[in-house]
Structures are given as structure tokens and as C-alpha cells.
Image 1 (tube, rainbow, N blue to C red):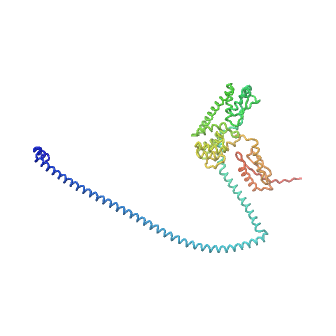
Image 2 (tube, rainbow, N blue to C red; image 1 turned 30 degrees about the horizontal axis):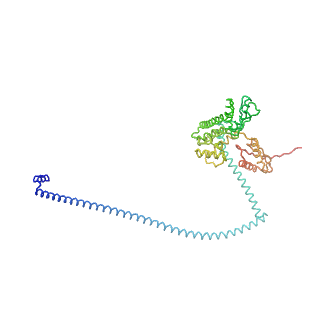
Image 3 (cartoon, rainbow, N blue to C red; image 1 turned 30 degrees about the vertical axis):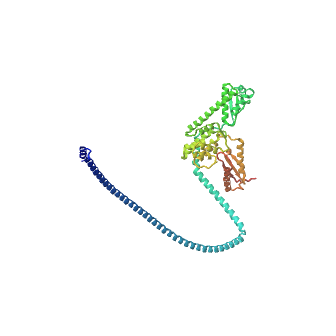
Length: 510
């Protein structure tokens, strides 16, 4: 239609008729557009009204649901309060009932207490009367009778206690000694050992006495340079073909020995050369110490040890304790610990590790004022060792309390390694002093005639006077002396205390 109208307009041209037709067409278009707009507006209005109604209904439902939920919660709270109120009332009733029962009990108790007090007074009178009559019959005062009875009871209790102690001790020995002896003997037999060595001097052998003059040097400058560089005292005396190196530190002695060997072999001995050789030897020895520690750990199958702890293990090779080489002692203790731990079903690797490190506190770079067990525990803790190993190191001389089963094993194996024959050198004066202290301790008791320490101080035989000491008293004396030795003295291994009571009847035929 629009195309036709457009053609008519085109044919008619731009005259008045064309204008009128164009206006008519525009008016119809406007009316149509208005009608369409009104229809769309009405449709939109209806849709908006419908959407508003839906939102209203939805909000209404939500509001009603919220109200219902609040009502449910209020109902639940009311029910809960009602139950609590009921329970509280029941408890109040029960408290009231118990208060009444308590009042009744208190009244009964007061009545009984009054009756008991009356009866007690009557019994006191009867007892006093009986004591008076007994005193007249026995001709003893109440205090004397009391003392006599207390003495008799004390003696009887002491006798019973000693018998009980003896019975418990024997029972424990029967149950434990056999297995413990088996484990200890097996452990000792399966470990190879060596004898004690000197620990204060080293002997440097030379081919001829002419070398002594070269070592001393002009006006003693060479020997002074060696002593200053190594910290070792060099003793050149009339001993043929030998020079003595004296120092408390075995590492220094070894450095001096190796340096002298290289100087004598080389033939060039003068202060500058001495300083050069000593520095080189010290470096080589440090490397040897590290290699010794690493090799020891490999031989024992110990892994993951801190390099610093490994170096300290290597330093043990040049330390000694009572003449016993410290590295050999630690290896021995480690092997003993492994054997005992295996017999007891414990961690073998942990026991071996604790045994190797138990004396690590004897080889620190510095010397603080601490017991070597505590120092060793702190060093091992610093380098990340486990708690079981730390406790075994710190407790092997009872400086701290033992908290693991590895600790007593390390302590026992340390004692076995140190107490075996030939393991350590004991100073003669200290040995004689310990023997005398053993004998004097036994002689301090009444009725002891003589005491003899035998078996190198491993057994104490006490001879008592038969008139003064009974058989029962002899048993008590043996137990008491052993306890005093255990608490007051320091000794390797164990000491057997034997009390001998002998009754002799002597007559002469004339």
C-alpha cells in the first residue's frame, strides 16, 4: 500500500493534492504508531502487574515461612525451658530430701558421738585401772613397759625386714642372674680387646746419637723451635738411640713425633723448616682424624652422623682414659651395646650409636667446667642426635635420670669395657687407698675382728667375733656393709662382701 501511495505521490508531483495525501498518510501512520504503542504499553503494564503480583506472592510466602520458622524456634525454646524447669524442680526436690537426710544423720551422729564419748571415758577408767594393777603385778612403770614392748617389736620388725629383704634379693637373683650373666658373658666373649697403653710420653727412635745434636741445634734453637711449634716437651738424655716426647695431649705428641720423623728423614733441621713441617703435619693429622672417624662409622655400620661428631670420634684415637685408648674403648662399648640390645630385642643401631658417642664429651675443642657426660650430651644435642641417644650419653655416669632402656645398657657396657682385666692402668697409690678404705669401712662396725680385701679389691672378707655377733647379725652386717660400699665408694665392677662367723671350742689334754 505504501508503495502504491508513494507511486501516486510521485505521479501527482509536488502539488497540493500530493501534500494533502502525504499529510493523510502521516496521520494514519501516527495513529497506527500510537495504537501500537498503547497496545505495547498495555501489554507491558499487564506484564509488570503480573510480575509485581508474583513478587508479592513470593515475598508473602517467604515472610510466612520466616514467621513459621520463628514460631518453631520459639516452640523449641519453650519446650527446652520447660524440660529444664522440670529438671531443676526435680533437683531442688532431691536437694531438699538430702538436706533432711543430712540433718537426720547429723542428729544421729551427735547422739552416737555423745554415747561414744561416755563409753570412751568408761574405757579409759577401766584401762587405767588395769594398767595400775599390771604395774603392781609386773613391778614396772607404764613407761618402762612401753619401752620394753617397743624394743621387742623393733627387734622383731628388723628381723622380719631383713628376712624379707634377703628372700626378695635371693628370688630376684634366681630369676635375673642366670639370664643377665649369660648376656654379659656372651657380650664380653664376642668382643676382641687390647691392653692398656702409656698415655703421657712417646718414644722417638733415632739411628744414632749424632741426630740428637742436630735436633738440639746451635745453642738449642732447633729444640726450642720444635717445642714452641708443637707444645710438646722434648727430653734428650742419655737414653741410647731414643728421644722422649712428653705431653698430656696425645694429638700434640703425635704431631711432634711425625714432624721429627720427617725432619730427621729430610736432614734439613732449622727453625723455618721446623715451622713449615709442623704446619703441614698438623694439616695431615686433621685429615687423618676425619678419615679415622669416617672409617670407624663405616666399620660399625653407623650412618647419618654429623661430620663434626665424626671428626670428634676420630680425635678419640689420640685420647686415653686411665691408659685405655678412648677410640678402642668406644668401639668396644658400641659392639657390646649392639650385642646386648640384640639379646634384649631393642634397637641395635640406636644402641651402637649411643655406645660410640657416650664419651664424646672427653674430646671437645674447648674444655668447659662440665662433667664429660653432660658435655657430651649437649654436643650431641647440638648436632641433632635423637633423645634416646642423648639420655644414654648423659646418664652413663648417673649425672641425669635414665629414661630409656638404651641408657642402662650403655652404662653396663661402659663398666664392662673399663673393668675387664688389663683394660686400664690404675695408679698404685689410688689402688692401695681403695683397698684400705674397704677394710677400714668393715672394721668400723662393732664385733668385727678383722677384714681383708682380696681378689684385687673385688671381694671383702669380714671375720667377726662369735661372742658378740650372732648368725642373724652377721647377715645384717653383710647387707649393711655392701650398701655402704655401694653408696660411699667408687670402684670398677662389683665387690663381694663375705661375713665369716666361726665358733671354736679349744681344750687341752694334759
